[in-house]
Length: 460
Image (tube, rainbow, N blue to C red):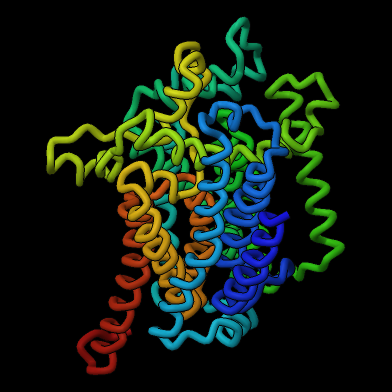
């Protein structure tokens, strides 16, 4: 009963803080911070942690804990710490920046989309060139993937399971992983979103055609390895864009309908891809989709706390970005892979095990102990709020809006993926530099051309 009371108190405090720093926790007006609260913390972490500390989870991963009574409590305490101190760090940033979340978010939500007025044709051709690179990157991804899982599903995969093919597609990719991740997996969906906004704004045939091509490419790259979550997050990006440009207004009924449709699609994917035949176990709270949502993301945090410093040595920075570890001639090691190898070595051997991604504080702890949890929580909170404030205050044009939506979906995913991606993420940096630089270049060029025309240096 004590843990339930603590959980309720933390929930109330955390909800109040997140409402203040986000401007809105309404499910019909989602934003970057509210998605972090609902998806990354409340659903994927906080609810499951209560089941675990009460010992009623009956989840296969928690059975791997040694001294489980002790580490169930420690893990619960760490999650409660994150629930309160993550929004506190965001509140600090808001105060320093003079950010009035409720007022500024609603103003952004209601403001009209602004066209990129300068050099429209030049922007389209630059965008077309970038789209060509993205499509070539998808072809490259298919070429360098030994067995493309989606093709195997359609034509038959023999004795090799689809789970094994998924792992092979990721771990045994024969090309440049960074090129694939940036230009095929990350860039294509973002380009399709930008093309969609321009299609709505201009109603031009060239943008419509380009959008259709990019949309088809984005759907393919999100399902090619049979991962279940990417296509859902891509559709959520579309929903967010339509909300922000005023094409969709959510209601409780619509949210319910979308939720039911998504659940049916998810169940269908589990049945087809996972080959589920035990319906009872599939619908259980600790198995199937529900078990994955409530426990799969948070239980590895408990395992990290249990293993590092006990069965495994602290990494002392070895899972930091490779450009940092390379300076000290250290091998880059991801804690999520080490935990998988220690807890489920048989999955590593048979090729069905990848990594046990979890709440970002787990990787921070694996490197620097409890100090890593404290510093990491404040650091991640500040990064999230700075990005949120920047995008809310940037011009609401197709490029910046699409980047805002991209980060609104990808930051929540990264929070339950690891800590080091918040220190240095080449994909995020390249996308911001690429599109920010493109908009800035065209604007500066437009201003310069306008200036010299006014001075009579260049005639129209």
